[in-house]
Length: 213
Ligand code: ADP
Ligand code: NI
Image (cartoon, rainbow, N blue to C red; front, side, top):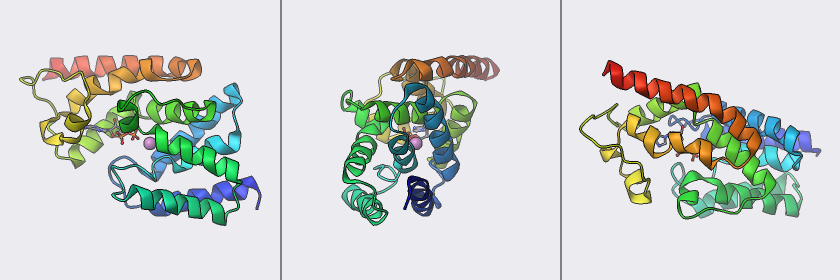
């Protein structure tokens, strides 16, 4: 099986795992992340197969989506094994997707390979700008968050327990807690350049939102 076929099979695997998700981790998100990761990698010259495979698989071991993470990881490994992905590429892909999630990075900055940095940047870029605004509202509505509460001071520091306690969260607060920080957290200069306009759009959106409120 060549790498194009392996990637097509991994796409089908992720599709099966995420097809029922309505929290913004849908297949369209995955496909945007793959496309962005590929674009970044064209400039940065990492291993293209690892970048694309990790982008495809980055959400199938997310603790917010799957309760049994060890089982989720074992399933991904079994799938790659069945597709005869090389052992070194399997190890690299598993390392990236395990370390990558935002919640992980709360536990301290994770050292990522170039390929990991690219996929993480592509994932973060999808959380900001016009699509990022829509995803925050979509996710917040799904979790019964309030839109906004002017009495609630913006909680700028994201701590893991508070992040999980969505009863005390508003969608607008999520911008302060996470989305406005992303531009400085990105790994690569290429991603930072793309983030600039998206960041400004979010700033003017939240300013307009508060004025309208
Ligand atoms: P990642 O894909 O990096 O793991 P998350 O799973 O935390 O990111 O978030 C998925 C999407 O939902 C992102 O667009 C994110 O901004 C949004 N989101 C996450 N948590 C909240 C929240 N508490 N309120 C509103 N939107 C959120
Ligand atoms: Ni993602």
